[in-house]
Image (cartoon, rainbow over all chains, first blue to last red; front, side, top):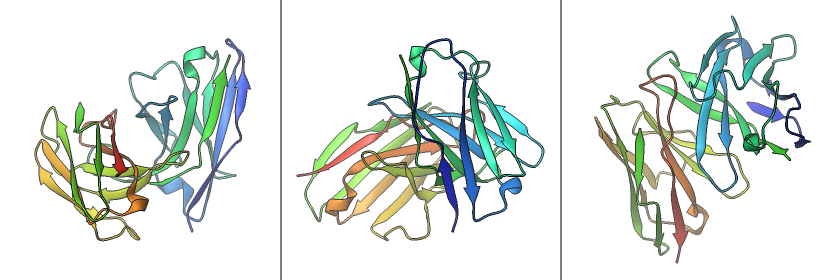
Length: 122
Length: 106
């Protein structure tokens, strides 16, 4: 069974750094794109970008490029989302999701999701 | 850009409901639908316009092509109360979501 298990809720201050995690179970981690989706309180879903664990190829949504970074640790099947300087506007739920398909352009859909990590910056 | 309509709807158990998703440009058949219940992660319902994800009830169906797509629930059930999102993957990045449609049960 595919499972994505995310790290717990975080409360941080503006300007602080943070790295949240998403550990994958039940499939070949290196061979599926894995990405991040932001959901601000009461709002819709925003696709942040994806990373291919096998070679760490990254595709950022231009709206998020420079504000966050993605990384992976293949030894622990874990993906990371990192901020170097948090803002109050980063307050949101963050989901990781396995992407299935041809994600360089074509059929690419999010078939398994983590439970979400709630980030509060205040 | 992906635009969903309506933003919300209210229907009775057993009704047939439809949600439309329009793309600003043609996106081939790279259109997918998700369901999100309160406090939960989204769940994939349909991918590539009309292919039902494993385990999704057959009352859910998808159709469309080019720039206009539809998610239909045939025989609305109480557990279908949720927000539904479309998402395109033709253009990348980003793989844009629609703004969501809230479905409520009368």
